[in-house]
Length: 156
Image 1 (cartoon, one colour):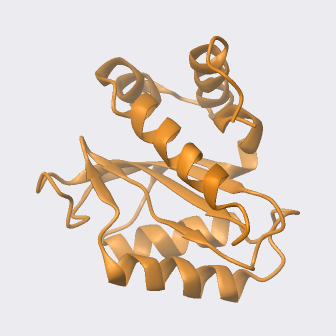
Image 2 (cartoon, rainbow, N blue to C red):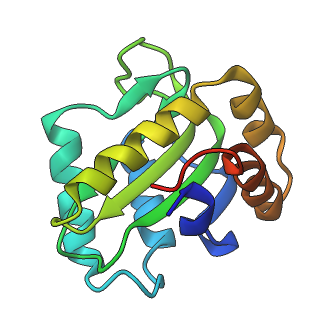
């Protein structure tokens, strides 16, 4: 399992229009509503919002990473969005967010959840990867980017 394997073009939105962190998260949850691994979209929304209230998922370097361990999914689910304008995400570095990853994993998959969070953070934390995500003009370019970047990394 890796990032590229979790993504489909339907789970990638480029230049998402939104004015607040809450709007971004809501739009990303809505994007995942038709995903075949999501069994309960309301539960997913509730769990992601609950986690965000506990501590902001603005991880720095213009990245937001809302996530949840939840009974709402039967396998890990990932969405990616670039934002049409930067959004305040209460990030640890006080910088606004331009790229958002939303990760949901089943409650029983804690180890995989942590490994996926780590991989997203490591890859998206690189300046060249972030710039390539922001420069992408199609979801397929984002998929190809992760396929290329993960080809030499071990499976999670």
